[in-house]
Amino acid sequence: MVKPLKPRRVFFDPNVTYFKPRAVPLLMLEEVDLGVDELEALRLCDYKNLEQIEAAKKMKISQSTLQRILTSARKKVAEALIEGKAIKITKKN
Image 1 (cartoon, helix red, strand yellow):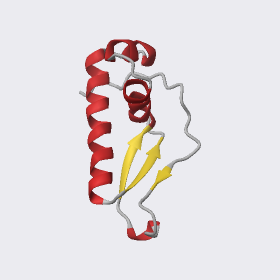
Image 2: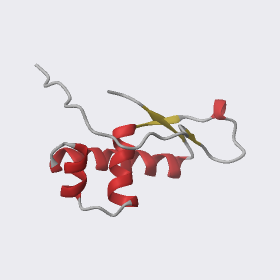
Image 3: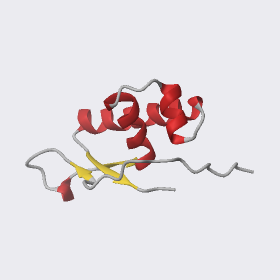
Image 4: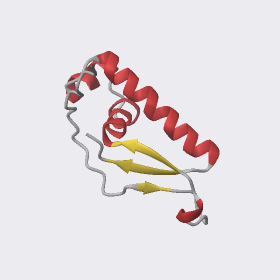
C-alpha cells in the first residue's frame, strides 16, 4: 500500500504558469510539468540560497524529501532547456 503524500507548505503562488522557447508556437512544443512544490524547492534553495535543512523546515517536510523534490525539479528544468520544451507549472497535490 502506498503511503499518502504529506501536504507540503508552499508560500509562493506563481502568476506565470508557462515558460517556452521564443518564436515557437506552444502547439508545436512538448511540455515538462513542474509542480508548485518543485518550484518552491527551487525558489528556496537556488533563488533564496537557503540550506536544504532550512528549506525543508519551511516546507514542513524532511530534508531527504526536499532533496528528492529538488533533484526532480532540476532534472525537469534542465530537460526543458536542453531539449527546447515548454515548462508548465502545475498545482498537483
